[in-house]
Image (cartoon, rainbow, N blue to C red):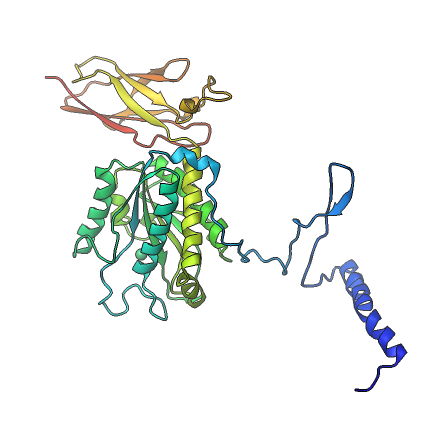
Amino acid sequence: MKRRSFRRRVLLWLTPWLCGGVLGAGAALGLRPPTTRIERQIERSDGVILPDPTYARGADYPWSRQAPPEFPIPPYAEHLRGVRIVLDPGHGGRGDVPGFKRGPTGLREAEVNLRVAKYLRDFLREAGASVTLTREDDRYLHKENSADLQARAEVANRANADLFLSIHHNAAGSPRANYSAVFYHGDADHSPASLSAARFFVAGLADALRLESQLPCPVLSDENMYETGFGVLRAANVPAVLTEASFYSNPDEETRLRDPIYNRREAYGLFVAIARWGYAGLPRVRIIEPAGRWKRGEPIAVALDDGLRGRGGWGKDRVRIVRDSFSVKVNGEWADFSVDEGMTRLTISPPETRENELRVRVDFENVFGQRVLHPEMTLKVSR
Ligand SMILES: [Zn+2]
């Protein structure tokens, strides 16, 4: 090998610096290099100035680069203790139908849904939640599709679940499509508690999967898909949400979805979402008077629980319900009501009725924006 001359070695050594100078001049002229690292400094408590290694952006630090696969249980997950959750791994039992809900190389959506649901169940149980799956293996609940969807929702209804989550993955004609969508049923007033849960799932999936594309508004009504919405959400009478985390029809995403670690990331994103939802308080209401049948003209007293007061701690004696958020209906009609000063008890003056049953609906918002999980209550009318 020919020995490089001294001049050539000096030139080689100078090249990066010269290039840096050119890039610097380019930047000054507004021509930014494709890779940008913005250097920031942080001051240590003893006054020493150091470069901030946590602040970096640009092509070297893409959003899609995922965090190490570590899945710690956050301390606030303790608020899930005893919370009843039903998970529904979508589809199942139709592996014999050619091409049914399969990715470009044959990955079945049903299989991915089940893996994610089981990982999520494990996280939730570790936090003390009470979890039921609508299916634990590769099967459908009913061979007819609409009865199958109904049966899944019934599992949640029978359990009077605090949350029903149907886990799905999406498909599209374009192989490029890949984003998360979270669905609620009907219009935005149908179940405010479902909407509230949906918002947490949007954030949880975005953090966990780090997909490059997002919808302008990823919280969606299921009526965007079908005129009467999704059967599984329509049949649920508890807070219910359906997640379409990503697209198995996208070849790169299909590869990722085959990886159990990636499935676990998704489950963890859903878990953190549920843990934050629980942390935000789960408001509840309960009729305390009358104890039995309702006599015409009698007021109805409802106990209010903001989902937070029971925890005690700093600020426990302050009202944590948004006063203007109350919505009180009897048999679908707005009803007159009053609330005590501490907002622990609401009294309704029901309107005249000829019906044999009163459907009482009491909803409100706590300081976290959480709505009443089970706002509908019924009272038999005394003859
Ligand atoms: Zn599906």
